[in-house]
Length: 80
Image (cartoon, rainbow, N blue to C red; front, side, top):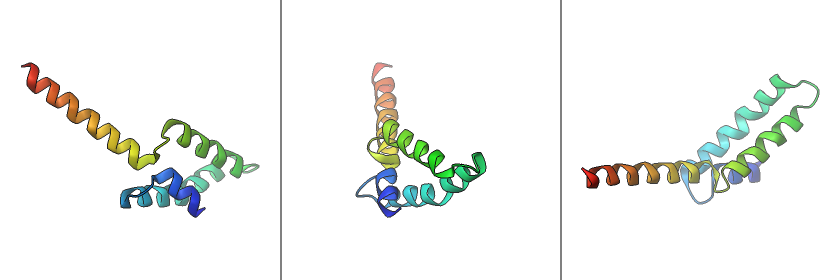
């Protein structure tokens, strides 16, 4: 579970550790509510989906999103 939290949250950042801990805490409970028969299968689907969509972890995706927003703001200010 520790390794899952590190991979999902993102490496080498405190925010990544927090996101990973939140994932480990809440996603198994959510998976248990979705399917009583196979909650770990649902958890695995969530895990694969997160890794596929955000290969650098949640913290890396947030960092990239903020950088993209800053570039758009800079481009708008330079074009006007």
